[in-house]
Length: 99
Image (cartoon, rainbow, N blue to C red; front, side):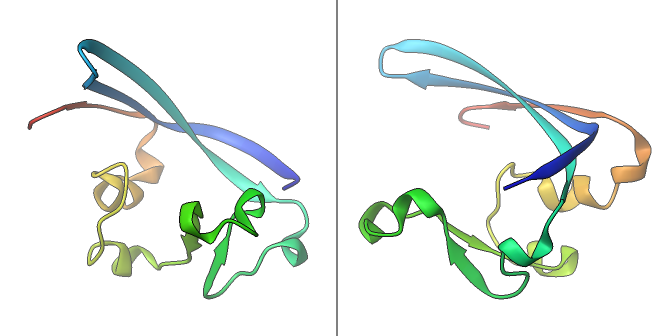
């Protein structure tokens, strides 16, 4: 998709095991805007382009309102809380496997 990248909003750290090794992942989340909204469905669900013929491994995307997110499992786990605080600047959080 052709997008415009806006402000950094979340810095997420994930500490977990990868086989027998300890892993540390850092994810950065930004506000983005579609340049051409006609290229992506803005209601319902859609599958990512690279999995159009391999539905067993497809990644499905679903549009949810902020209120609906609270009723679903989403990642990062704190997404519903953090989305309500987008105007508070960059949020940093750490997820430790097993917590």
